[in-house]
Image (cartoon, rainbow, N blue to C red; front, top):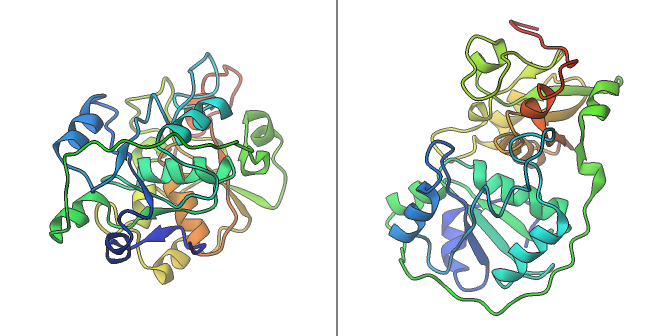
Length: 272
């Protein structure tokens, strides 16, 4: 499989039966939405993965609302769907966020052959491609995770961050500015961060903007990107898009929900 982190629907339809497909649809406001949507119809052969149970680790006082799963948890997920280190994986959802999270976790734990379906579920259905309600079974795979520590940073690293890096906040503008915060206990952003909402790199629901447009979005960052969001999930869309244009971002996996869990963390509001 090529290094390009996305795959188009035409190519995926030709590869049905050859790739391990995962459905990563979810809703923070409706925990049952993802599984309900999957059972109502999915890409043939797709396995459902739950954001909270499969793609996130146990929550603690610190670490954010969606900590990265520990290696043994992700090993179990991959083996359950019949995967190995060399298997080909394609993830999809309906807004790129859950699929990008799976893509990032695969890369982080040592899987290279993984891509995200550009356009996701909605484009797949809109184009009249095959749909199934059959829940597939899989022979158990074998996978040994090898976490790549250099891909993620924690709060201590961010606090010591030196020159040559730039913080990129992937949340919506009003949350970055501190005008509105409905999820986390404090409003605002990490001082020094610039705001590139993950929706700014999409053209329509679940579709990345063309490469030339993405290059324009990220032009002038002035340093290696360190990306965060509310809990480390939607930031993965920016990470995906940055990799597509040749950047080498880091993910602050705990993100804003981790940052504000420490009373001494400074908070900025308004424009930087």
